[in-house]
Image 1 (cartoon, rainbow, N blue to C red):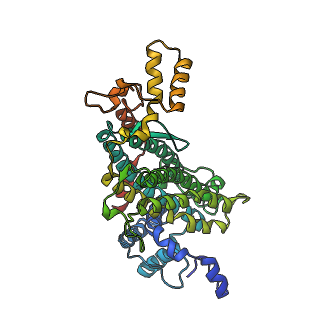
Image 2: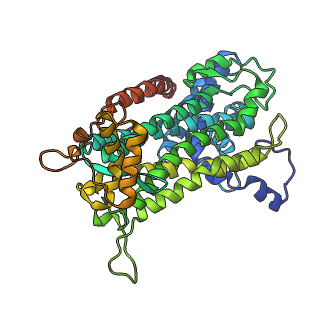
Image 3: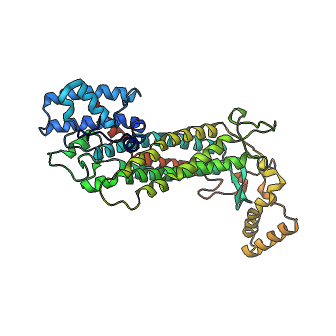
Length: 455
C-alpha cells in the first residue's frame, strides 16, 4: 500500500531503494505518528471536515493502535511503505471509508516532520533525566572525596594540587552547559509543524493552533515553507546538543583510561567492571571507558554527517531527508547506553587516597611554596626564581606549612579558599544552576496534553 498510489506498478528495485530502511526505522516513530493522527482527527472534526461521529469512531481505534505501538507490538507489514500507510490501512480495515479520511489536509512531509519532533521531545526528556542522575552522582562523589588530593596536570605534566572532588565536580558542572544546549534543541523540537502539508499549507480550513495545544507544543512553526525547512535542521540541532554531551562523557572516559593505568594508578574499577587478556594473565582492562570513548567519538560525528546530507538543498521537501533518519534515530539509544554505563562506573569506582605523599608529585607544591614566600614579603618574581632554581637543582622541598599535624596535605592546609578551588567547590551553586535549567523544560505541560489526548 502506498498513499500516493495512482494505479501503476513501481519497478521492484526502485521500490526497494526508495523505501530503504523506512519500515524498520518507522517503528520507532509509530507511537508519535498515531498521536499526531489523533490530534489531526480531532481538529478535522472541529472544522467540519469530519463529523463528530466519525471522530468518535476513529479515536478509539487510534488509541488501540497507540497501545500496541507503546508496547512494541505494532508492525509494518510487508508491502506497506511506511508507518503512515500502515496506520491508515489499519483504520480502513477497522472502519472502512472513514479510515481513508484521516489524511485530509496533511502530507507525509509534515506528518513525518511532526513524528520526528514528537520523538525528539520524548528522547530529550529521557536524556535529560539520565543527565540529572549522572550529575547527582558526580556531585555526591565530589562531596565524598573533596578532601582527597590528586595531582593536576597541564600538558600531561604534573602541575598543581587538585582533588578528586574538584575533578568530579568539574564534570558535573560541565553537564550544566550540555543541558543548556539540550534545552536549546528542545525549543526547536517543541514547535508544531502540522498543517504545513507539503510545505505550502492547504486550502482546507485547518486549525493549527488547536493541534498545537492538543499535542502540548509551546508554539508552532508558522510559515509553512519555514516549517518544512525545519526537516533536517531540527535533527541537526538536536545532534549538536548530543555531540556536546558526548564530548563531556568521552573526555571523562579518557581520564578514566589514563587514571586506571599503572603509570597513574589514581582510580580503580571493581574486577567485575573490567575485562582481561587472552594471553596476559595480569590484565584488568578499562574496556568500559574505552568503549564509552569510542561511542562518544562516533556520536560527535553525527552533526557533520547530517550537515553533509543537508548542504546545498533549496527550500522545499526532498527525498534526501529520508536518509537522515538512518543517521539520527540510533543516536538516542546509543546515548542512553553510554549514560547508564558511565553512571554505573562513577558510582562503583574507588580512588587512591595518599597520592600527594609520593615524591613523584612533590613539584606540584611549587606554586604553594612561591605563594608562601610572597605572603612573607618576597616579591613574586623573586619567589618564583628561588623556587624554580630549587626545582632545577633538585633541592626543592615543599613548604612545611603545607602539612597538617599528621603530616598530610589537605585542601585546608593548602589554604585554597576562593570559589571553585579545591577548598571551596561550590557544588551547591552548581546544583542550583542545574535546577534552574531543568525548570525550563515544560515536561509536565506535555504530559498533561498527551494524557488528555489519549483520554
